[in-house]
View 1 (cartoon, rainbow, N blue to C red):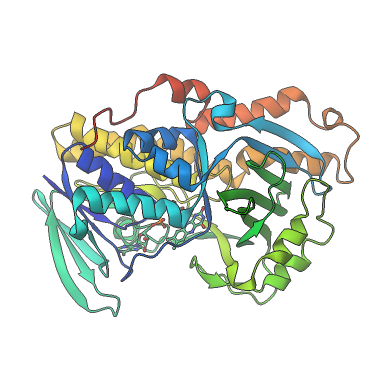
View 2: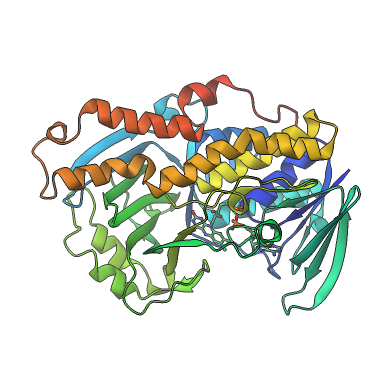
Amino acid sequence: MKAIIVGGGIAGLTHALSLHQVGIACRVYEAVPTLAPLGYGINLQPNAVRELFALGLGERLSAAGILTQELAFYNKHGQLIWTEPRGRAAGYRWPQISISRGELHKVLLNAIRERLGADAVQTGHRLSGLEQRGETVIARFNDPSGKPVGQAEGDILVGADGIHSTVRQQFYKGEKAVFDGYLHYRGIVEAGPYLTGASMAVVGHRHHRAIIYPVMRRPNGKVMINWLAYTKIPPGAPPLEAWDTAADKEACVDQYNGWSYPWLDVQGLFAATPAEHVLQLPNVDRDPIPRWSFGRVTLIGDAAHPMQPVGAQAGSQAIVDGRVLAASLVAVRDLAEALTRYQDQRIAAMNDMIIRNRNLGLESILQTAEERAPEGFKHIHDVLSQEELEHTAASFKKAAGFDVETVNSRHSFVDMPVS
Ligand SMILES: Cc1cc2nc3c(=O)[nH]c(=O)nc-3n(C[C@H](O)[C@H](O)[C@H](O)COP(=O)(O)OP(=O)(O)OC[C@H]3O[C@@H](n4cnc5c(N)ncnc54)[C@H](O)[C@@H]3O)c2cc1C
C-alpha cells in the first residue's frame, strides 16, 4: 500500500507522519522548489494539539510557541465583551498553542525527515493531472517552470494542496473561490507582552476588526505578536490570492485611528511593525461541496474545506483530517470505502464550519455588541446577556469538535505508538 500526498503544508505533512505511524508508505509531492518556513501566526486548538502529542511532537511545539491562556473579545472602544480561559486553563488535558506557521512547518518537516527519510518530500513537483486506472492512481507533475517532471503511481492519492487545490479542480471543474470584498493585512512584530502575556484578543466587529496574539517568547522578555487586520479592501487594490503579497502598511495603519486602549495600543502595534513584515490577502473561502472522496482520491485540509479565518480553525481542522483519514485506512480494508468513511466522519461538520465562519462563528458577539451599542456600553449585560455570551462560545466549540468534554474524553484518532 502506497499513498501519494499532494501538498507539503500542515495537512500533508501531518498526514504523512500519521500514515508512517500506522505503517503505510507514502511520499509527499510539493509544488514549491524549496520548503522555507512561511507564514505568520497560526493557532492549534487542543483537539489538534492532542493529535500532535500522539505523534510525539507536543513538547517541541509547546517550546516553539506560546501556550494560550485566554481568548478575549473587545468592542472598537476597547471595552471587554467576553473573556474565557483557553487550553489547560480551561480544563483541557492538552494546551492550545499559538505558534508561527513557519515553526510549526519546521517541526513537522524535521520529524518527516527523521522518521520517513530525506526523500519523503519531493519538492518542485506541482500536480498537473491525475488518473485512476483500476486499483492504481497515477499523478503527473510539472516542475516550477511548468515542464513535465515525471509521474507517480500509488494506491490512493490525498489532495492536501490548499485553498487553490488542483486535485479539487479535477472534480469541481471551474469552481471559483468566494471573495467577500474584504482584505486581511497580516503582520508580525516584537513587542512587550499584554493582558495575561498569552492572550488572544479580537477587537471590533464584522466590517472592521483586529485579531492579535503572541506566538513566540524572546530572550529579552518581549514576545513576537501576530496580528490580522480585517478591513474593506482599499480602492484599487487587486484581489490577490497569494499568501506572500507585500502590503501598503500605512494604508492599514490609517484605518485603525483611535484603536489605542489601556490594555494594548493596537494601532501603535501595527505602526511599529516593519513594513516588510506586513502582508495582504483577500478574504476568500469556497462553498461547501457534497463529496471529498472519489474512488481512491480524497481531499484534506484547505483543499477540502477552505474557511474564513474565524475562530482559529483552519490549521487545527487540517490536522484532524489527516489523523481521521489515517485511522480510516487502518480500520477499513477496502481503500475506496476507507476514503468514504473518512469523508463521512468529517464533511458535515466542516461544511457547517464554512457557513458558521461566514457568519462570524463565535466572533458574532462582536457584531451583536456593535449593532446594539455602537457608542459602547456601561455594562456588557445591558447589551448581551450572560446566557447569549455563553451559548455562542459553547456552541461554536461543540460544532468545531473542541469542547472540553469531547477532547478530554476521547482517545487519539490514531492510538498507536510512534516509531
Ligand atoms: C505559504 C503559506 C503561508 C501561510 N500563512 C498562514 C498564516 O500566516 N496564518 C494562517 O493562519 N494560515 C496560513 N496559511 C494557511 C494555513 O497553513 C492553512 O489554512 C491551514 O494550515 C491548512 O493547511 P493545508 O495544508 O490544508 O494548506 P496549506 O498550508 O495552504 O498547504 C498547501 C500546500 O500545497 C502546496 N500546493 C498547492 N498546489 C499544489 C500542487 N498543484 N501540487 C503540489 N503542491 C501544491 C502549497 O505550495 C502548500 O505547501 C498559509 C499557507 C501557505 C501555503
